[in-house]
Image (cartoon, rainbow, N blue to C red; front, side):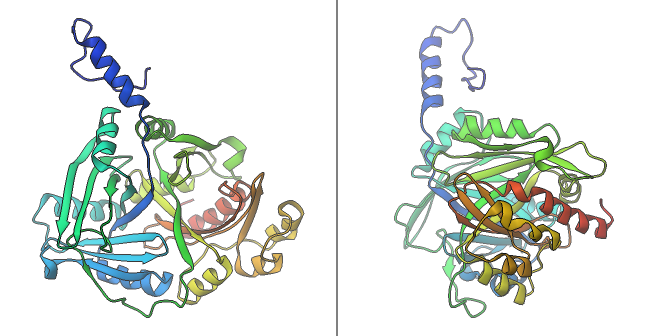
Amino acid sequence: MTDLALPRSLDPLDLSRPLALASALSLAAEAFPVLGVDSVEFAVGNAKQAAHYYSSAFGLRLVAYRGPETGCPESASYVLVSGRIRFVLTSVVRAETERAEWLADHVARHGDGVVDVAIAVPDAARAHRLAVARGATSLLEPTELADERGSVRMAAVATFGDTRHSLVERGAYPGRHLPGFVDREPLTAPPARELLTAVDHCVGNVELGRMEHWAEFYRRVFGFRDMKEFVGDDIATEYSALMSKVVADGALNVKFPLNEPAAGRRRSQIDEYLEFYGGPGVQHIALATDDIVTAVRRLRASGVEFLTTPGSYYDTLGEWVGETRVAVDELRELGILADRDEDGYLLQIFTKPLQDRPTVFFELIERHGAEGFGKGNFKALFEAIEREQARRGNL
C-alpha cells in the first residue's frame, strides 16, 4: 500500500518487521469516526468588533468569552452560535506566547481568516494516534482541558496552508465551548428564530497541482471518500477555470471541497484568493438554512452584500430545475440560485467577501434531498465573482 505511512524504525533487516508491518496495516484499516464539524475558529484583527458584526449581520448569538479578564492575557476569543454552528473569533491582545505570536503573524500575512476547522470525534486520543500514524503532522498532543464544570479532550493536526484540524472530544461537558471560557450575554438582541442551522461544508483553496495531494491526505488520514469531482467545462467560464474535488466522511457529516486553479485566459478566483490570502486556506463556508428566503432578506437588511445574478439566468431556470419550494420570481428578486440532481434540488446564494481582502466569503444553502454543490450554477456563480474581480482590477 503506497499511501501507508509505515513506522520509521521499519527496515528490511529489522527482525520485528512482520509485527510492525501488521501494526501499520491495522492502523490503516481502522475506522476514523467523526461526528461533525465542532467549530470554526477565525483569527481576526479585532475580535470584539467582528463578534458584533456576526451578531448583528448574521444573527449569530454570543454565548461565551475568554480573554484577559478571565485569566487569558494573550488573546480574546468570542464564541457565537446558531443552530449547530459554532464560530470562535480570536484576536491577539499581547503577543507574548508562541500561540499569540502565531495568531498575530497569521492575521498580518493572511488578513482575517480561518485558522481551525475543528472536527468532533468520540475519542480524541485515538483519532490523533490514527492521524499521526497515517502521516498527519501533529500540532497538539492529546490534552485534557478542565474546569469546575468538567473536561474536554482535544488534539490537533495540520492540513493545507496554515489551517489546522483540532480533534475535539466533548463527552458530557456542559459548557458553551471549552473549559476556561465563561458564559456571556448576547451583544445584540437575538433573532426570534435561528435561520442558520449548521455548517454544510468548508471549501479549501490550494495551489496549482496540489488538489489531489490534499484529497489523498483526507482519504488516507481520515478515511474520507471522494464525493464529487469537477474538471474542465464543469467549472469554467469564458475567462477562467478551476478544478475541484470534494472529500467527505462516509456519513457526509464533514465535507471539504478542495479547489485548485486551472489554465484560463485570465486569473481565476482561486488565483486571486491565493495571492491576497498569501497561500492556501479556507475560501468559503457554506451555512445550511431551512428558510433561505427569510435568511437572505434578514441578512441583506442587516448590511450583508450578496453576489448578483443576471436576470437572464432565471429566464429558463424553471425548464431544467423544475418546481421548487420558492417560485422563480422570488428567486429572481433575491438573486438566489437553484440546482437539481438525481436526489433532489437545492437553493443557494453567496455573499461578497466579508473583509477588505477578496478572500473569505459565505454561502447560504437550503437542501431538499440534493447532495451536490450546485454544479448547474457554477458558470453563473463564477461569472458573478469575475464581475467583482473586474471591479477590483484583479481579473
